[in-house]
Image (tube, helix red, strand yellow):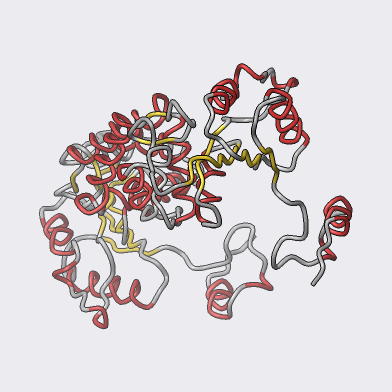
Length: 201
Length: 201
């Protein structure tokens, strides 16, 4: 804007909102205006919720999940089978798997994948904690649910190597045709994997 | 989510973020996770900016603009020609016209348009204030820049009626082909208006 038409506080709110993923400079302005109009119903509560999250949020020292308590809601959930650990790259993956609701297990968030080109080595990830967790015993199975990328698979191999000799079953997610997917649009690698892992009807 | 995987504070943050225009339930979750990861750089400052806006924001008692001071930045700007008032429906329209930067005028925000079907009458809009503002004198021109909808035009007519007999020139935005627009995609009304208002090259 050439000239200022509103106070610096609102300009600053727009600038910060534009950094939220999903919002750009234009939609940040629209969002700010909406928030200001819904001052009592939305802006106030949101400001408070953000302040609360800012003060309380922390990473779980056991699994790396994001929560306001440590150990987190998942690690302290006694109804979960804590002897099965699903290893994921990111908290978003943990949430995605929980939405599927297929397993009643514990988790371990790596916080990324090994990527020598980006300078990310084993010490930058939450791997040592995972090895210690398995070494302490009581873990029956480790399901490595990293992305099916080169970095993901490298990380899976590295973790398997680190756990060599320990009493734990290590599994990975199945490759295959996505449910609802059309063969025509799938790549050769996926089709080959789906054929190899075919099951009897 | 079937079972809780994170603290209630973060769940609440996600719920509130989903109400921000431009974000849905899914992107709100992604946004919340990003905010939590950028705790110090983004979540903290945004919480503070929202709190600040919540405490300070108000509508300008003169023109209806959103600001933290009253009268607002636009009304108190001495470099603007305060004798020309652009009448808009919404603060968003004020901001859009300022981005164009074509005029150096004052504004008046109606806060909507007359819409009997929705039960919005003249008393629900910021019209009386506008009439008073013109009646106090010093206003040379009123540019009615409402949307080119039936409600917008009805509102424009109503305002013109209310100002009958006052010493003020009332104008409206030109209708025509949008700059960069293709004739093929335009409706008949716009094309007719553009032909009628044709200018010599």
